[in-house]
Image 1 (cartoon, rainbow, N blue to C red):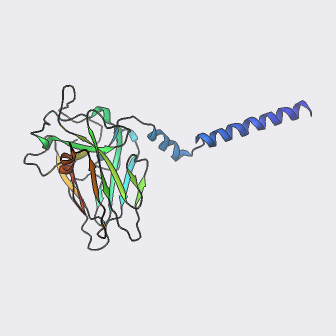
Image 2 (image 1 turned 30 degrees about the vertical axis):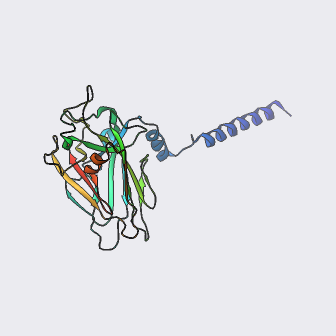
Length: 250
């Protein structure tokens, strides 16, 4: 074998080694997947805020959760300010993924002032700054289900039904309070209780989304630690259907 043949064989072997290595590690991702990979290894405390439009801070990608609501006598609707959320027959939630380390309980929040509690979508591995995890399972339409999601929404997921995971900010503690929401360069909102006797302290606009979930053998459920389950259900409530209260804060 000539030296040139040896060189060619070594070069081909090296190229195949690199290609195989990329295929095993996922480094050969296409352009869209690079964006997904970047999001998936984001900050530990990332959260999802509710944007007023389909534009996200700093050019970030929009995340969407589309639920196929009940077909028969559908009562899905929105009222007041719900940002870029849409719900008339089916429901599409839209979120922007941001760094949650800048979010804290409100300075006014306390066990005697639960109207100052709020929640955001959990998008990192941990809830930030003393907030508490809870979740809502939506039993969506069984017939010809058309659920879908756009972008990484973990730890929430969408299949034939939908499971959304949230972080609840309750009472403030030493070093864990804020008197204003972070300025992210866009109008946005969070989830907050609209039924309390007093109003949410920093609300600019308020509204809610009502989803008409599956009627037949409905399996909706709420999951939270007993210590904060009642507080979470003030914000995202319901039995066989669901109401999600929202406030615009910036």
